[in-house]
Length: 394
Ligand code: ADP
Figure 1 (cartoon, rainbow, N blue to C red):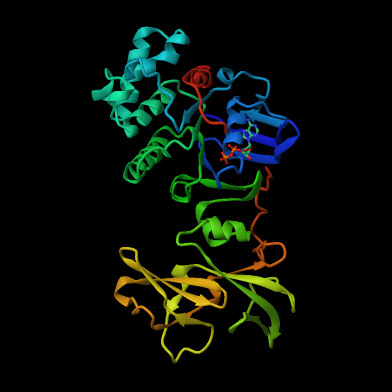
Figure 2: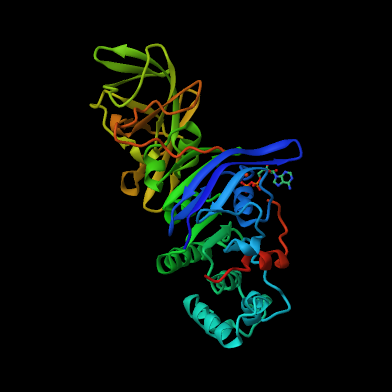
């Protein structure tokens, strides 16, 4: 079991700096997900922790020991890659055993560990097959089994489910969650898929262009995004945004868009008269309403009705912004009908138009977010994996 600490970690390729000032503490047993769009730096940070990329600046420590200069195999980490990285000419059993044999683990113990991992991952029927005779999901399970038998202090997953189809991805996601519940090994998991991040993570580290946007529990990040980027990245269908100007309105505030004015008490926000802001509201937070409701209404002509199973996504224009609202399938309006949606103050988000940061007041008791700024080469060779998963046995 292990704690990981990244202090002021930076990475440059030649004169191109891709990560700077990355700070993070991962607690023992914690499951942390690095989330963000392609190219934001997730894999590079993971690979620096694994020892597959040199750390240009700062330190990475595991259980209080700085590992910057340690070989990957000396760090006690096991990594699982997107492309499985299994040796094609070996059976699944030999693939799983390979690293242990190199570590000169006694044969009987290897057999025991393989049996245990195979049972855990439902691989018993496939141990004598070669990787090409397995489905993608089974191959990824074999790759995970190979990591598990090393009894690592830390698991590092780099987009492990990206090569699988949607159904299998869901299935494997649940398996990984169960595995973590059972083994409780400290884990860092890289993905661009917000559903994976939201469902697996104790904490999400959301990255954007080599910098940290927000760190927090999934529900915190969903409910209280601290920037426009986070608000737009998290949530599907995506949050709606409307440009507004903020003015005083008695004891409260008026938020004027091109087409309408929303009136709010505003005690939860830090607002200045005359400032430009972006009002955000999630599609599921808009309530279909009747003509007698007059205040805080977003209205328009429903020009797109999309069936989403138990809900229907209604899209209409509000000035030059498109707004979407999620309604239950039984409430679906007719196409081209006039629709009205009520906006509840406790479900809106406000961001500064110039800086993109939230205007929400931080509750007094809330600690400052752990802030760290912070970034893959493809084509990883199986041999590289073997270096990473070579472990010290505690
Ligand atoms: P992510 O995992 O979020 O998709 P990466 O960590 O792979 O992002 O990449 C982060 C940034 O670093 C990207 O701009 C990428 O082009 C750059 N990068 C990654 N590897 C190298 C490399 N070997 N040489 C130069 N730039 C690189």
